[in-house]
Image 1 (cartoon, one colour):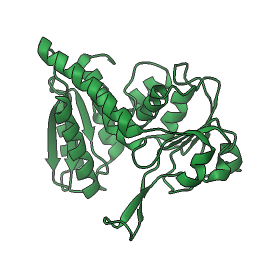
Image 2: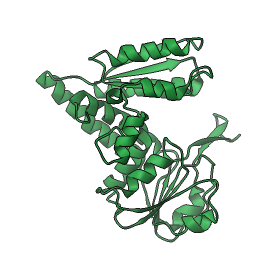
Image 3: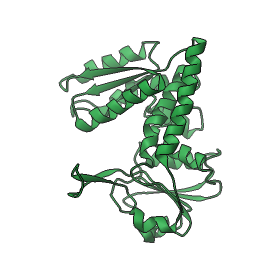
Image 4: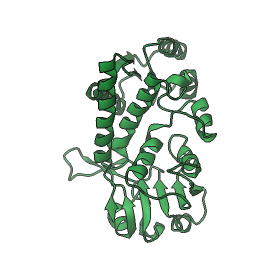
Length: 292
């Protein structure tokens, strides 16, 4: 059994991106510029955005953080998005979720220029991905693809079961794993809360991708011997033994499942570290004009 070290892979990719940005600077090329919009002061959102800004600094990117009071109207926020759309120096735009209840997140995502949608949430990018056209792939699914590729895990002809159908992870993951690509060519089963005999379906998987957001839901009886298990889940669970008062748990009961696997991602330090580096990759692609 091999534990997939997402933190190490993320650091490796960061070094590659940093070296490329340094070469761009030396040649006088366009430095990638990422813009983040943060509405309100949600604690988790503050942390996520701070990590993204820090990554930009580490990699030599330019970054801009636009903060707005939670009282901002939907129309005003959409106008701010349009300003970024129209700024040719700005290559990527992310709007940190969640947004206040009076703002429709779908409307905001659809207002972002698809060419700057480095989160990969715009319907045009999702559609292009589904058709196999060049597109920005959302960060978590891209991170999973990178882990599978960097660990030389064979996917062609394998049965991949995805647990969870969210538009951010489960659905795009199911599309990506079946495409005609080096990391792909799987026969894919997409499961969800209404799937009957879920454990039985999962136990038929050569590759299981868990993305349902229920801590330690996937137990040993869901796994066949030698399966590859990718745990996308990340949930805070109360834990009095921790200084923070909580522990981070994945969707997979790791200690029970790991002995049956050929490869498995831990939580933390599995898929999580790959998400921000995937966002940086998309911003670099935008600055280089390689998608559109």
